[in-house]
Image 1 (cartoon, helix red, strand yellow):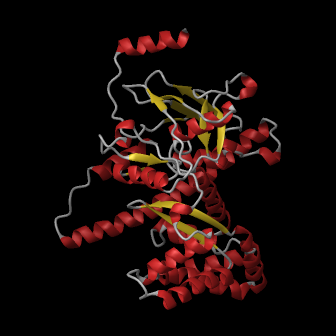
Image 2 (cartoon, helix red, strand yellow; image 1 turned 135 degrees about the vertical axis):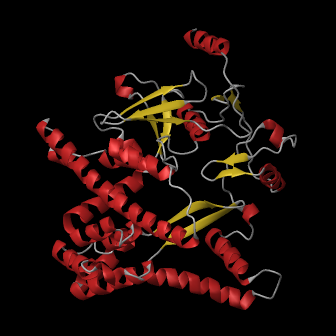
Image 3 (tube, rainbow, N blue to C red; image 1 turned 180 degrees about the vertical axis):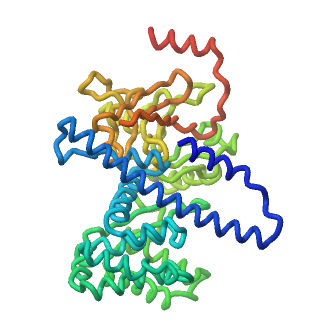
Length: 430
C-alpha cells in the first residue's frame, strides 16, 4: 500500500514535457499505465472476493449468501454506482478466470479497460471454451490490436462468436428482448434525453415511421426535420397535441424569492437537476395558464446549514408525505458516488432494531444499494447536528464513506457557531 501511495505521489510531481514529442510519448505511456492499473485493480478485486468467501465459509454462511453486498462495496472503493459495481465484478470474474490473454494485454497496456470490457461483454453468452478461443485469437498476439477501434473490435468479436456458436447468438438475441425498456437522462440546457432499448425490428420501425412523417411534413412550417420527428414522437406516445396538455406531475423545488422573481438562484427538479430561475418560473406560469392541477408545498430549512427540517403535505397518510420530503432532501441515492434515482425509502437503523420511521433515520436509496445494506457488516448511521443530514456508511471491511444531503436551491452554507450547535442539541433533547 505504501508503494502505491508513493507511486501516486510521484505522478503528481511529474514535470511538464519539454517538447511536443515528449508530451505525446508521456501521454502514450500514461495511457498504458492506466490499463496496467486496471489489470492490477481487477486482480485485487478477485482476491477480495476469494478472501470474503473464505471468511464467510468459515463462519458458516450458506453458499447462496456468500459474497452478497460485495459488488456495492467494490463500487464504493471505485467511486462508482452500485449497478456499475455489479457489472465490474462480473467483468473481473471473466477476465481473471477465463480470459488470460485479454488480462495480459490489459496489463501490458496493449488493451484499454474499455476494450477489455467489450471482449468480456460480447463473449458472455458463450461457453468457457469458446470464450477462451476468442480470447486467444484476438489477444494472444497484441500486435493484432494496433490501430483497431472500439467498433471494429466489437464487430470482430461478434463475427467470431457467431462462427463458433451460431445458436448461442440466436438465443442471446431472443433473451435480450426481455431487456427492452425506456429511460431518461438529464441533458444540457433544460432538455431530457429519452432513450428506448427495443428489439431490432421494433426500433427500426419506430424510427422509420417518425422519419416518414417528417419527410412528408417538413416545409409546412419553420420546424426542422429533427424537430418534426421529436414533436411527432411526443404526440404519438401521449396522444396530446401539446406538452401543456399532458396530465403529468413535475416537482420543482425553489426558494420563495425565486418564485416571486426576487432572485436568480437555480431551482431543482427531482430526477433531473438544477434549472435556471426563469425556466422554473416559466414552468409554474405555463401550468397555471393551462389550468393544470398545481399544488404548492412549503419546505422549511435551517437558516445557516440549509438542512430541510419539515414540509407541508397534502397527503392524508404520513408515510407518503415523508417519502416526498426524503425525495426533495436527498435528490438521489444517499450512498456516496451513486447518482441513481431514488427507488426505495429505507431506515438507516433498521426498524426491527428500534429505528424510527422519521426524516432523521430515513433515506432515499436505489434498489441495489438498499439490498446491499441488508447484508452482514453493513451499517448506516445518521447525524444532522453538524448541518445538513449526514449519512455515514460502514462496509464489512471497516471502511467508512460519508454522504451529506445536497443544499436546497438558493442556499449557501454559513458556518455554524458553537452556540447554535448547543441550542440545536437542547431543542432536540426537549
